Length: 105
Image (tube, rainbow, N blue to C red; front, side, top):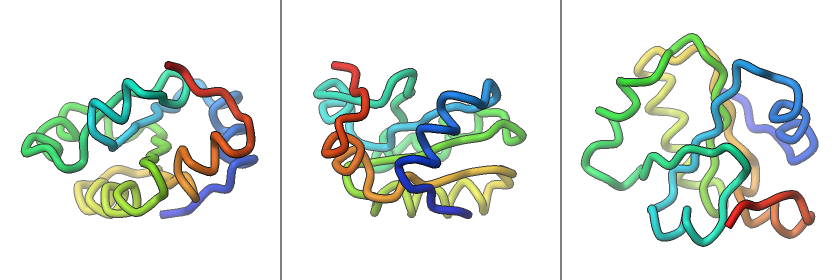
């Protein structure tokens, strides 16, 4: 598992058509603002592992939360489940927003 800084994450988002961005915050946090094209899979929901099971393990995933803690745990779970290429956004959406990168509301 690799942590990506903001520049690396933005580059991945802009240049990898095989990328899926996953927001692991709650649905309330997600609707308050999220990265463009992100899907919401709440790490704390009882169905998180089941939802992960529906995803293609061979795609590329960028995972984030508010600060990077939940997403780190989510990435660890994804690796255990056999996902091949999963990245954690260092600093989460907090750092993303501080640097004036796009947030969808």
